[in-house]
Amino acid sequence: MTAVLKLLFGICLLRNGPESVPTQAWFLVTLVAANLALAVFVLGAVPPALSAGLALNVALIAITTTAALTWFALYVRNLEPRFPATLGAMLGTQLIIGAAMWIGIYIVGPDRVGDARIAFLIWTVVVAGFILHRALGCKLWVGILVAFGIRAVGHIITIAALGAAITAAGGVRVG
Image (cartoon, rainbow, N blue to C red; front, side):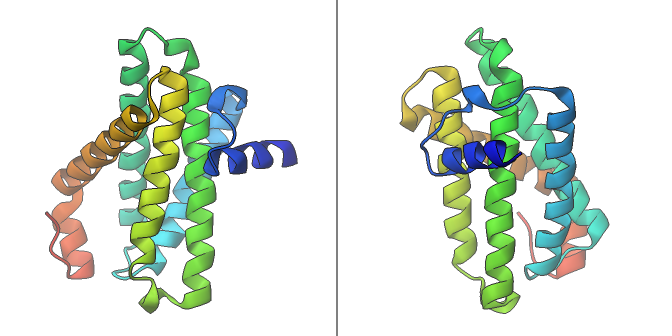
């Protein structure tokens, strides 16, 4: 397990590609479950804090959108066999970056997170773009654009599906 964590951390630092990530179904299911659990903690800690159920739904939409659009991008390039490793790399790196964000929240306090959320978002998109660049065999900037598009579509779907609930829960206008 230490080797997998080192591999995923190397991907977060843009040193390793997704091709070596384990592709077993149990591993992917574990990554999905860990991402859902972490999302409940992070989205419950960062103002405006969301309830566990709402945070879980936000995370489910993000994971589903990421998986579906990643598969579609690979399908368009006729690279579907790369999907399990690519999805594993995407979910694993999101987990590591999310854990780093969670640790950062508790070090500086949830009220002072501010611009750090933007830095973590940029890091997440760049890492996802790097993974897609390697999986799709395209230029890095194209991978980053595809990753940004996946993130944007996920945000749009989240607003469409849960915008009213997020607004009601946090008192924040969404959309």
